[in-house]
Length: 195
Image 1 (cartoon, helix red, strand yellow):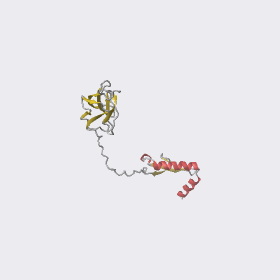
Image 2 (tube, helix red, strand yellow):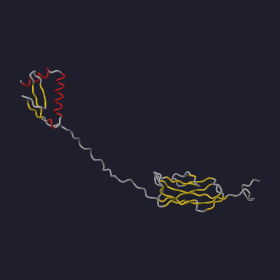
Image 3 (tube, one colour):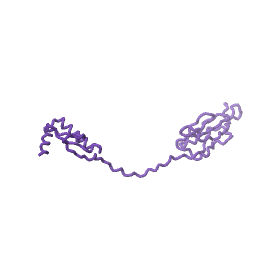
Image 4 (cartoon, helix red, strand yellow):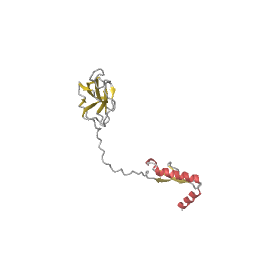
């Protein structure tokens, strides 16, 4: 009947005492292996106590270590090959293909400028073309063709260079000079001479 008396004592305990007892039990069950031995006793008022410190007349209780859960490892995904980042092949050459060096053009409406790169323009790199120090906008999607409309009479110089995403110059094309000739308004055969 000893078990029955303890049950009666537990029912007669105050709510706070029951919570304290429950907390102690949970700590004992969840504790690490260092708290594997507990002592249980009933005081003169019939209250059941639990402690990890030995008491006179206490019953020794052995509590196994805390139960832990180790989840199953996730299935290995396809091995991710750590491929090194692709290094772009350096430019072997960059030249201004059009207009021809030292060419003379007579009264053109426009002048096409074309740059040849080997290998082609890498993604992220930028081709910059200048006419007499002024930047030109590309006229094609590949960014290697440009056009000058109504160029002025005289000598002009085209330069080109490729810059990487960080702004570093990757390739410089040798500059090309060309001349534009236009009829003079003072020439008797000039088609632009006023009548």
